[in-house]
Length: 530
Image (cartoon, rainbow, N blue to C red; front, side, top):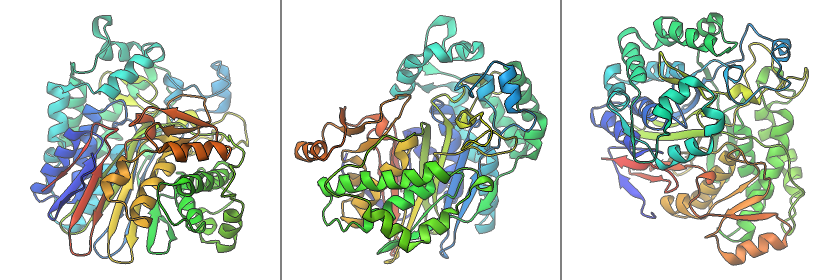
């Protein structure tokens, strides 16, 4: 898929075609890009539940027609009424990846929807909530066709997931796992969405839905309490930004790894690479990634515990030059370093007024904690599995602390008036895929869809693998791959169009109002436009 779609009235992209159609429907009804993204996010919770849902977190990066850019941080904090001692008494030396003890942070997604809709209402008259959630309710109630990616992950992770009895009853009724192409229903989720329509989005945290969630979380020994629900709220944040030669680029501040995404672009620009897709392009981005990840791994987390300021790091020209000088354009620097996993959905929307939204929403690992809450039909995230139980350690568990996030939505304002929203799922791969897509399009003039489709790479661990190699899709130019190996990269060839490379997407609005968009052939998604 290499053709870039174009239009004028409105455009969306997401990793599932049904979600994209939900967003387009809202734009056609006169809704804003913010409302379209809520519609897509809710539909994804019904049809792409292995990647996202109401039990996860989200970050919104929003550009308004007047040039303002803001972040909505909708991520939850660690449980307030537990401690590292409680984990140890329960027999855990580390936070487990699955089960109730992994469900240890509040879910922020729905609070992000609420704040986004408040912003939408400030721009124009809003559509009713039932219109935004209508498709999600229908698919949850009547069923959706299980995607190949959901079925494959369900099969590969069944040993750890089916230990949760409620998960097993939902995903393996009569002891038979759902397969690709089968129709799965989630009537409890449909009922939850209806309650949100009837009682308002706040009822997720302070109402009947919250009560049902707490009841089921306690059954699996989650440390979350009523206090965690009632005290949670999404917040506005100032985005991180960096000035490149022809654009300002934006991303989410800590506790996300957005600083790494921007640092890669800052460092790569200083390398003076003149041509895309060659050895210098890919090697340069990989080496810039290493330098950015070293800063991220040492410093990024809940900003209340950070010892360095992320924006100050990006603004420090001398330091950026010093880091760029550490990059040898002929040899690969030693690796590995600790890496971060995670699975996510990114979606984007631009409406006719020029509101542009880059939004990312996640359960962290595939199917999150594996805790399926039967009264609500919700899977709860395991974002807090990244916490460490050693006091004083990086990202150490502290009640009320927000965990480190791989999630980071991206956006750019070009000097010529273009606005670009882009992003991907893929944990450790998110900054790397963002850098690939952006540099291809913005620096080397590659058409948008080609920039998303072209062969990609991934340094480090992903999808539960411990491999720290430089993974490259096998359809990458053989000469370039040979040069990467000669330079000392531990290259591992993987199948082309592999999901491990993320499900990317991008939208661009030109100064004359023309829109263009791209979706990833590695996903089940599409661009939808009118």
